[in-house]
Image (cartoon, rainbow, N blue to C red; front, side):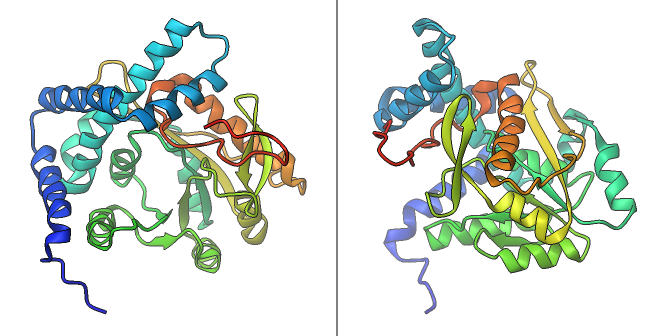
Length: 299
């Protein structure tokens, strides 16, 4: 059925979309300032998200004292506030205008696979810079992406059109056949497995020392396609003006055939990337919502 996006129930979505278009064209320093204010406002008023973030950081960084954890929570909210402006920039502007702000390391790892005509599974991470990082990545390499469609149909349409210029194809996360087909055809597919998709899709493997429900799909796709799994990490640099993208070497001897060992290895790669800039990770989501049988919930 055709959606009537002029209906009043979509007016707030149109306002959000319009705000993103405006935000994308703001001066750089103003973006950082507004993003910081958004992050601090969310820290103050988004109690549920603050509780989730505090819980995650307490679990994952027990070596930090309470003041250090509190500061990391604050930095996380600021980074994710700025991330909204970064997402707007990635979705609403040509990334070419930011080429001078990008440092791209490890390109040879992806270039080698591309020259050989081989598909790849790009191992991504849910950093606050995710969508801007994807836009900047498209300046150098093309890729497909796996995503969960947004629940709001108007915003889902906007998001799909915004991502279309820098991905060759956007695949539903349930479309395993499509992912396998694209990789076997020589495409690279960007896939971020660092979220909790429930017990049925997962095995439990350590992540920051916590048993976390970790999707089995990464190893399954690699096994079905024979594709290299190549980690891609990206972050905003401490100068708050430039970004680093980096391809790490493809994982060797992966998958191993042991689902738990493979999941633990993927988690270790992601954890190492997060530890370099922990405040830029999406700690606001319930990474540990599914617990092993008999264990109480954290949230």
